[in-house]
Length: 264
Image 1 (spheres, rainbow, N blue to C red):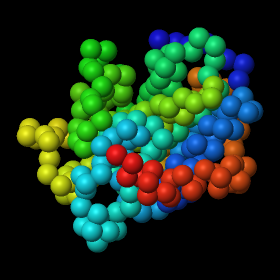
Image 2: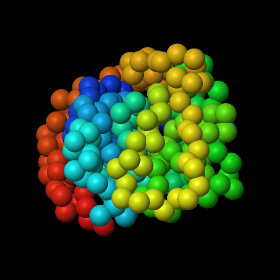
Image 3: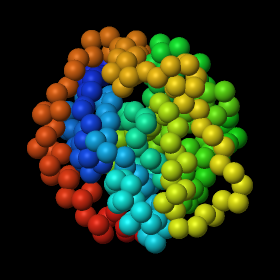
Image 4: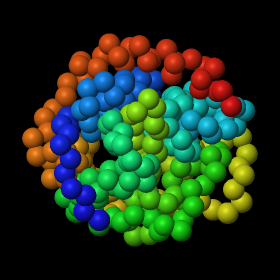
């Protein structure tokens, strides 16, 4: 489906790798900024060390071997958005923040963002599509995010390639997600205390497998930013991370708080 351009300014942020808490704080800061400025931001970023991110309402307390994770050098953070556990390591993360338009449903905004993602992936040479409408979103269990695609997520060759989730607050939205470059999601099972899934977990799609090569984060970011210019704002310009630093610092304590990380 083709969506008409809106009279909205977009900014583009390619952030260097940060700690998980800093990445989540910056995403929430961008949500606040979108509400106050009416500028949308498409951000692409990485993680300074392997990090397990937990969905907002995912049951996690007592589900993971924290000593084993520390030994393996894996950090933990809880996302402000929903969904299930995801390992951020051999992937690139995107986020979109924008003010919610009147009458703009969750599905509408997800579909609009998907058009950007599909356009950008196409520029890389990846033929992706949207998961079938009848595919229901899984419950927020301790199963990995990339085990199965939820309705509206992006797949390649029938397998999940992009995992996304959206949160809305005070008239603005944050959608962020992970695009797998290579597959290391099976590591999540190593840290889980038991498994609720008896069946083998299907392998997700990856950019490396699909393209036959390993694209860089910068290459992926450039393709996605070009897609923003194609689909939303031909005059989209960069945003420097320093422009949201003070807002990010204000959000940081929440994500560094163990009571938030292990709240359920």
